[in-house]
Amino acid sequence: MKTNSLAILFRITKWCVRMVLLITGILPLARCGSGYKEKGGKVTFNGEEIADKSFVVLNDVFGKTDTNAYYKRSIIPDADIATFTGLDKHYAKDKFVVYYCDEEREGQNYYLTKHNVINRVKGAEPATFSVMDEGYEGYAKDGKQAYFKGKGFEVKDVATLSVISARFVKDKYQVYFDQSLVKGADAGSFRVLNDCYARDTDRIYYFGHPGDLYKGIHEIPCQAASFTILDYPYSKDANAVFYLYTRIKNADAASFSIIGNNFSRDKDHVYSGANVLAGADAATFMIPPHDGTADDMNYSKDKYHVYWKDKGFPVADVAAFAPLKLDYATDGRDVYHKSRIVKGADPATFKVYDHGYGEADAEDTKGKYLKGVKLADQ
Image 1 (cartoon, one colour):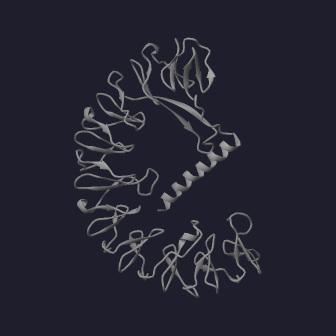
Image 2 (cartoon, rainbow, N blue to C red):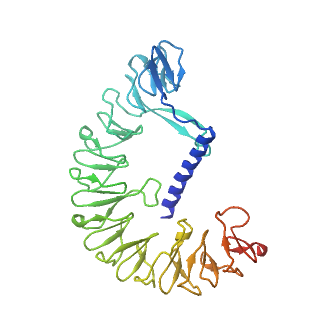
Image 3 (cartoon, one colour):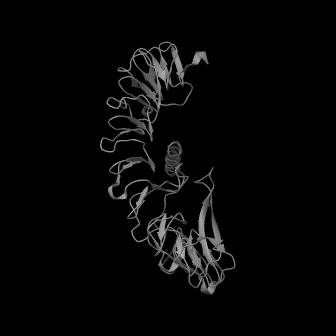
């Protein structure tokens, strides 16, 4: 799940950056009048008036004059003006060419720089080309094939093609995930269950997020008739339990329960992901109380052992062991950072800071510490 966690962290970071830029005014708030608008005989784009009186608004992002076609404020080269029309917020066409247009942003300056990209859709037939406007952007088709974001992909029967969700389409005969065939799927009964699961009459599928370690679509080896989705990423049928799309070997479905932090249990075992946590006591295994930060959630314990992530390590007093912050913990006799003792630390006066940056992240009466090492000892 490391890759998935990094993807989530990246999305959160982008959101935080966006909020800072909005607050500081670097990134303006979207305006109600964004895009092309025509009112009172005046044409504007993002509130700025367009002087050319021949300008015709086709939709929010496409327009044309007597001499040029436009995507936003960018000229579409060599467009046939007389037949040029906008189809939605990305696709446009004229008598000869289909266009797919979008904005691209630079990774290092994601919210500060962007430029318009205008692509000709290779092989598309303008006469039969149409946007599949079913609530999901990017899908289109012509008389020969299907398209997603301007890229063609083959389907068996383009005439009956329809959009199921943002990542699934189907025709009369087959189902497609991310523009690739889902082998064996029954188009007539296929449906999406949620953001990660789909099914037909006889099969259950797990599909990962695009940036996920488990990307792609995977058939779960389960009994479809009794399949039940539990809290992500767990599911089960009458006889087996599954982590993502992998069966948890020998797990007892009847007594199975989810503990949290990637741990689960049945009457006999504790599991980390799809694997048995060797030696763990199922009856007493727990996540110790913590303040809710990601670092603190790496600790777990049972009556006999303490674990950092899924690795056990020795402590003086298991019963008294409790997480602090920033990967620190204590059992009253010693202080621990992750799975090792912080040498010389005083449990009675040891205090962890509220943040993990700066020259130190903890202190006691003996000194200050950074990542479990006393600063004077570095």
